[in-house]
Image (tube, rainbow, N blue to C red; front, side, top):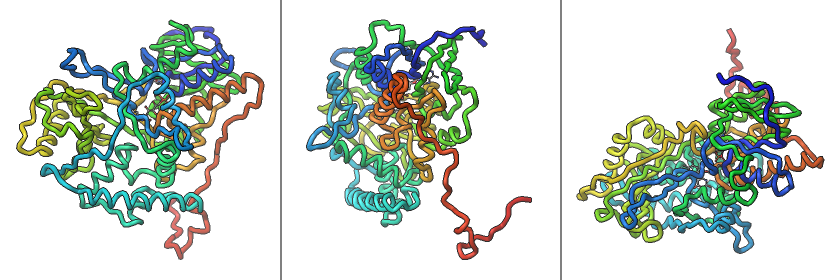
Length: 499
Ligand SMILES: Cc1cc2nc3c(=O)[nH]c(=O)nc-3n(C[C@H](O)[C@H](O)[C@H](O)COP(=O)(O)OP(=O)(O)OC[C@H]3O[C@@H](n4cnc5c(N)ncnc54)[C@H](O)[C@@H]3O)c2cc1C
C-alpha cells in the first residue's frame, strides 16, 4: 500500500467526480465566488456517463464514427407552451450539440417468423398504461401502499404472460426505459418520474449524433469556470477512502495523495456506492447503508453492428425495429437504424439494445457469442435475406466499469421517499449528489444536473455563513404491517419463529 502522507492538500470544497452532477456543483460554487475547490475524477476526461467511442468506419471519410455508449437522448425538452425547459436541452442548445429527433412512430414490428403486425397489442398497452397512470395518481394522493408496476398493470386487465408480443411491448415501454421489469419497479415512483420528465417538460426526445461526442457539452461548460490545465481538476485520480466528520472531509487516492476540505460532494454512481468501491471512515451508519442498498442500479447495453453499407438489408426509412422472440423476453428486442437519413445515412450501422440480465449475459460471454446471437435474431427478423458479415462489432461492459458499476438507477417497489432521503442525506460535511439522489428525475441527466446544482448552492450558503441545514434523514422507518394487522382474521397465525 502507498505510504500515508502526513499532510494533505487543503481546499474549501472537494467535488468528487466530474460527471454532470460534479461539474454542475463546481459551477455553482464558482458562480457564488467560491473559487477554492478541487474536482477529483477517476477517468482521463470530464463527462462521466456521457461517454462516446469510435466505431466502424465512415465510407465517405475513412474515419470511424463517434457513437454514444452512455446517455444518448435528451428526454423531455420543454421550454414551449408554458412548460419549463429541461436544463440539459438548454445546455445542448448552448453548446450546439448536434441532435436528431427520435420518432417512435417509425417502428417496424417483427416476431420469430419475420415481419408481423401487432399494432392492436400496442394500442391495448397504451390504454392499460393510461389507466395505471390514473390509478397511480389516486394511490399517491390517498397515500395508499405502493405496489409493483406489474400489479398495477394486472389490476387494469393487462397480462403479458403467455404472449411474447405483449411481453415485448411491455419490455419496450418499461425495461427499455428503466432497465427493470414492471415486476421490479414501483407503480407510484415510476409514474411520477415519467410525469416529471415527459409531461412537465414535453414528450419529445432528441438523440445526440454529434461527432465530437456528447461529453463535449460538459467539457465546454467546465471551460466557463476552469482555465486551461486548471490545477483544480485532478483527472486520473481514484478515490479509495473518505474520512468524514462534522468538521471536514479527507479523500485518499490510490496514488497515495490526499486532499482535506471543509465540505465534500460525492457524486459517485449508486453502483460505485453499492460495490463498496470506496471505504468510508467512520463506517457508514445502517440507515445510510440501507438507503444505498434499497435503490436499484441497472445496466443498459447498446450493441453496435456495422454492416457493409451497400448491403444494408433493413428498411432505412424507419428509425426503430422491434423483435418479439418466441421464447425469451428481452432477447435482442429493440434495433435502431443509424443509417436513417436523419442520423448517419450510408453508415450501415444497425444497433440493438439489451438490459440487465441480457446485458450481464453479453458481458460474461465473448463478443463472438453475442454477435452470433444478434445475427441469429436478424435471420429470424428478415427471413430469406442473407445477413452479411458485419465489418465492425462492439459493446460496452457497464457493469464491470469500476467508475460506475452499471448504467443508471431505478426506484423499486417498497422503497419510500424516507428511504431515498437517507440515500441523499449528508454525513456531517460529506454531501451526496447524482442522478440517483434525485427523487423525481432519478436515472436521467437532468436529475444529475439538478442534484449537482442543489448541493453546490447549499454548500455555498454554508460557507458564506448563511442558513446551513443538514439534509433530512430518517433513522427509524415506518412499517406497513402494524400490530393491528397481525391478527387471526387476517390469516396471521402469530407463530413465533424463534427456537
Ligand atoms: C448506457 C446509458 C444510457 C443512458 N441513457 C440516458 C438517456 O438517454 N437520457 C438521460 O437523460 N440519461 C441517460 N443515462 C443516464 C445519465 O448518463 C446519467 O444520469 C448521468 O450522466 C449521471 O451523471 P452523474 O454526474 O450523476 O454521475 P456520473 O456521470 O457517473 O459521474 C460520476 C463521476 O465520478 C467518477 N468516479 C466514480 N468513482 C470514482 C472514484 N472512486 N474516484 C474518482 N472518481 C470517481 C466517475 O468516473 C464519473 O465521472 C444513461 C446512462 C447510461 C450508462
